[in-house]
Length: 158
Image (cartoon, rainbow, N blue to C red; front, side, top):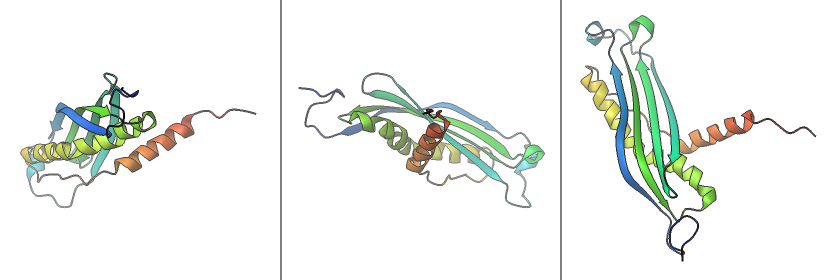
């Protein structure tokens, strides 16, 4: 007997990472070699994070963790990077109402340490000290996105 999520009835829920990979990576050092010298002050660092997911099969989802960042501004830009780090995950015996939160919170949480290391290595290979991103609270990010989605929906008139 199987349940609606393709697993076996009574089996424990499971989240399996089938594969993970760097889907897209870009690093720019537009002002080199001038930008590689000592800096008078710490640069302004901007980081943006986004998570996308698409269902590949009944239990399989591709999750993309997109991280963009830059150090410096305008003509004083030191570096800029964009990374799309992805994984294919299989959800087994996860109740339907929990699928979306698991895909959008737990999957990027599993991908993040690998993406963080790729970014640190990329920035270091660009001639700068490695940039180690602080951990990201994907649960808070998810809750914020859900609130934004609810606020964007039109309200029914009585």
